[in-house]
Image 1 (tube, rainbow, N blue to C red):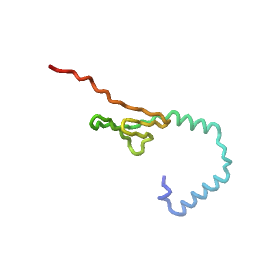
Image 2 (spheres, rainbow, N blue to C red):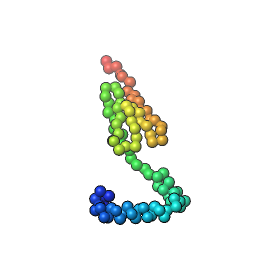
Image 3 (cartoon, rainbow, N blue to C red):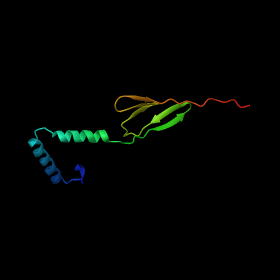
Image 4 (cartoon, rainbow, N blue to C red):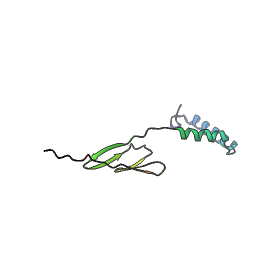
Length: 98
């Protein structure tokens, strides 16, 4: 499948013309099944999200790839629904050795 940038001008114009014709005939209604099928597909997605952690001194610094749906700052992760996850480092108690 070609992208629009790869299409010859004539083919590009034909695609745009077909799109305009289809759009003119569409009344804007979507079948209920289409809406619920799309909703179910979105709800069932289980995508892995990468978060990288690095210790800088005694601070935890989190990073995510540029295309991540998450936003991070220091030890906080903002989820897509607005909730925050705060990660705190807990050190092992120091044991005196004699």
